[in-house]
Length: 228
Image (cartoon, rainbow, N blue to C red; front, side, top):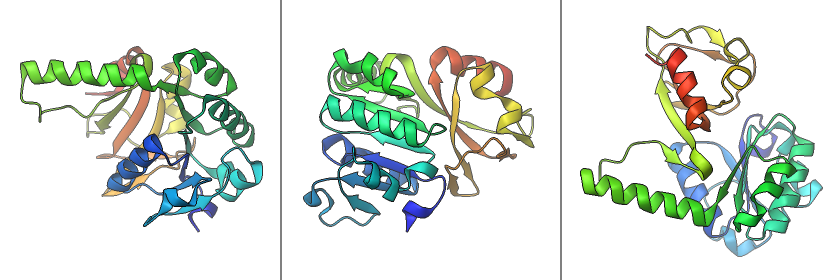
């Protein structure tokens, strides 16, 4: 069972937003488990899932939350998002938690509950529409970059570790992304395989494609130092 493996991802809530997250993760080849209380959410599902309340501690443990690398909270009600985030942070202090805010008024509460990054749907939709419009006015709409715009300038960027990089043969702890720059390494693509279990001892090798999440400023500082 994937829930018993280390370093997997968990999606809490498989409704309108959660289903899109699932599709994206499937296309990326990442290992994950989705949790939702509605069995119909998993009709014809060809991925690992668990029917249960995402705010129930036993259900979260059954999904392997204590060893998950990343937890995505995509529940429909902000009260449930806050509670699930609180529980997830308590059960796994080292995980990266990305949460959905259905109302911008809940953003601060979700951060206080322990989320690392919060995406307000209305704001994200506006940002994406503006970004798409801008791109289409200046170039072909098909030529979108791979950066993913999130709430308040939070980005996920991919970078290839070239032979000139100072990252080669260094561990995550040695690089100190969070401590020095504030951003977080959330995944490594190596020889066609996706690694999501990122430990302090994880080693970065030449030709790795690393995924880093943080603000534009944080990622900018990281790129200034390591991306050549």
